[in-house]
Image 1 (tube, rainbow, N blue to C red):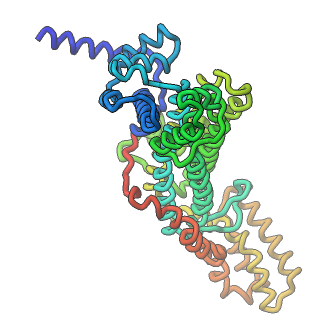
Image 2 (cartoon, rainbow, N blue to C red):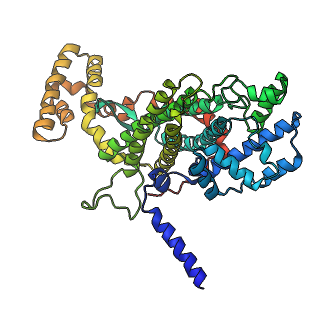
Image 3 (cartoon, helix red, strand yellow):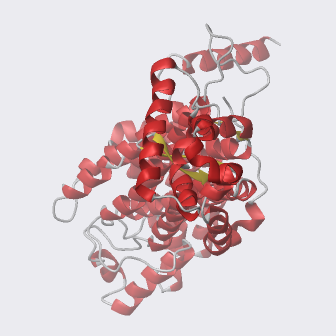
Length: 493
């Protein structure tokens, strides 16, 4: 009993100690378990061991004196990592890869002589990074597909619901709620293409040696170039890649990181624009994000329903966009075959980009699954502005009824200015329609006014554009992700 209490006390102390140091909110507060694991130490170091096993297997298959027993020993300890020992080794050696070579060798004494044979640190370091990048995209792509799917359903539902369009955030010609959602979707479709392309363009660094010349492996295979190339191909295939970069320095080109993070930064820009639109529409009370039954919008103002999910997305999207500067600058200062000033930066910028994109997409799925539309509010805003927008239709109707275009234009101009003064100076409603109805000049078209002011006559081909866009450009993109489309997000607020 004493030992149990002592153990419990130690656990409580360790838990308390966690709150005495900085923890990244991206992991402790926001990101999904699968993305957090993808960039975890366990994933990284077990991948190192798997890569050492792949190397040993390929070297054995090509004739090097490596035994089945050595490989079996390595495989049996692939997940068995003594992190305490590894940390102690790194403190002594000041070298993370060699610390883990020693730690792995400690539990694999038979295989110790052939672990990391012929390789440089970047064999495990860079190749693992490429695996993590690939797997990170594989986590993000279905999440983006689900956001697109939910938003497509929203666009289809409201394809023909007229709403005020805005240019310069001033009322403009009408569009529809669904058509506006398609503008958001079009950007997401471009992001899907960019993420997929970045993922598919990834290659393996492969087995290249200290400066990328494969000299150590050529020596191991006694000058047999074919065996060195086959070694590279075999390990690349074992790691799940179709191709390896044909030339590298000590590292793979850091422009690869630019390609990956630029696709994520572009996604961040898309998200910021969309969530800003949602926030603006929430202010107008036309559209709101989901709001929990017991959620509090403000500690001081009980009536508030703040768009906090969209605000979180904007906040994190700015961070995602800002991270793009890191790989650009890192790639620009890689001297000759490599310098080590990339390492510390990449430990932060690569995981944080994926972790940030991950929580943004999870939050957006939650938003797009519960967007609330208020048609009556939208209709009221349309009624407030539509008389001004209908002036051209009124002029055309008067001309068809025998009137003079210039005379009608002047009449409408004067009445519009009077109505605008009521709105702006007196705070009243737009009474242009009433003024037209009272003016005898417009008597020939009074019976047409209701039809001339029907909002659906002002939305052009918006519904047809929505239907065609969803059919031709959205649904086909989602086809590969159909099996993963029903996943629900439990959003931690």
